[in-house]
Image 1: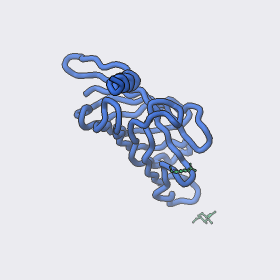
Image 2: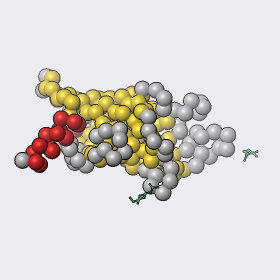
Image 3: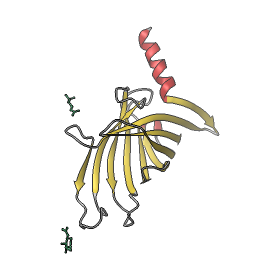
Length: 166
Ligand SMILES: *[C@@H]1O[C@H](CO)[C@@H](O)[C@H](O)[C@H]1NC(C)=O
Ligand SMILES: *[C@@H]1O[C@H](CO)[C@@H](O)[C@H](O)[C@H]1NC(C)=O
């Protein structure tokens, strides 16, 4: 059946591996994060301006970014990354504290979420903690590794690997 073929294809694309270790399941997800940072369809907005005029410290943004199977903007949408980004570093190192809820809306984890917390510095391989989850990812712990990949003007694309114990 075509539907089953499609479902299997998505499953293979999204789920790299899932193994049982001492009763805990470990799942590795590979996907791409797409953020439109400017224009009428921006998925990231500045919500609170920084209080001081000589630093970005204290700025708060809100995002409803897209999670896609691939790096291509036309690639299939599998979820959203919804949350807050704050400039929580007084140093001018562009470190951002992010609090993101990954909400899977398609594929094998449709209806499940992952809560991610941690520091993001663009231009590096960013490691952030997975501090919880819901649905298939109830009681999740783990980490994500993400890095920027080349993207068209106005778009920020990060390649994500998530390693989840749940
Ligand atoms: C914004 O989204 C609308 C609706 O999908 C689309 O028609 C329009 O072309 C988009 N604008 C830009 C600048 O991408
Ligand atoms: C920034 O704030 C300082 C202190 O309030 C003020 O003296 C200065 O004029 C401000 N600079 C600008 C560019 O607004």
